Image 1: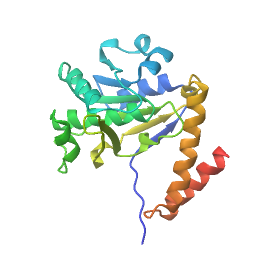
Image 2: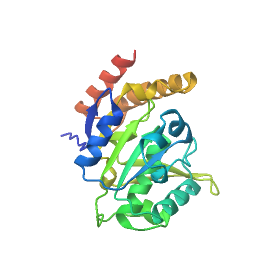
Image 3: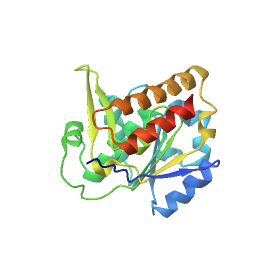
Length: 216
């Protein structure tokens, strides 16, 4: 017998800014921290739309332990009660580390990664993907790299599912062409992988086939 579970509310819109402001209020987030990349911060004019002092954009192509430490320190200097991730997989993965830090009030990255108990407090989060391929906006997983060990770690916890994922195709229009193409191919490969995954079920397979048909 198979089962499928995904608690993320998916919102499709053509006005991500308006929808985001509405969802922040709806989730009763009074002080959100925005996690994004330097490129998206500039291209989407985020400093003009939101409080610049609440935007963390020290995110590279793959989030590292160093990025995590800087993000945690950034949050320690503020009283954030929610997380907004705007970007590709790297920004969204780092945002999940931030969610774990705020929910557990822990600063050690290994403790955040290894934690298996209940979160003392749930941190509401809203994820907005700006690329085609990651799907991190609807999962509880994030990947971070320890460059000293040259090792990849995964952070995973049911409390790290975003509350809301906002999908707006306009967010992808400012992508450089090479990144747009590579992330479309990433989405296609993920979809094929989902079909032959050993944990595949009828629901996930149907979603994967639908994604493949949409891309092709």
